Length: 206
Image 1: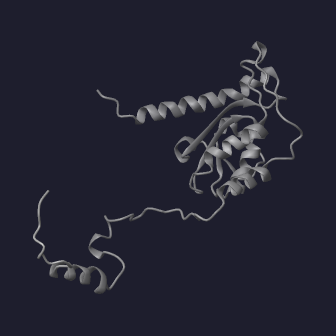
Image 2 (image 1 turned 90 degrees about the vertical axis):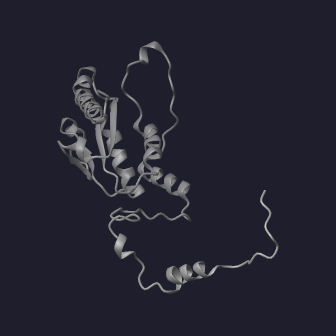
């Protein structure tokens, strides 16, 4: 501890008053002309959010508007004969997908590689309900899944143009055993290409 005499002066010093006048009373413009190019968030696009928004209700309304009326519950079966079966219920998966993307900026560019058209249909609808504005980029090998769907754009440069990637290794329940491999081969190819691109971007030690 350091003692201070009781007679020390309390209050702003003269230099402090001058700084206050300079940075408060004498301001003539709202920016710093000499630091405009390297100070603050120059060139950064900010997304405005409403903190008063009921985010839970917005999420629930978007998912509800994207799904048809429920016909019943889902049954989980854990038997040896169902392992490695790539079929699933897209309506059950959609809320989990929506939960992953809901916090993201609304100008996020999504890509899609998948063999289940129904999931993509629901995902397209849910993106619009949540306010996302960019089209979904679909790899050309999976273009048949996106044929005729609004807000889907088949793009050979999907790996470089998108910022979020979805790899769906599932198929529609009506897809025959022989067609499953055909549908999922481009998904695996897209996944392998993405992993190669990510690996090449890592600065491995030499």
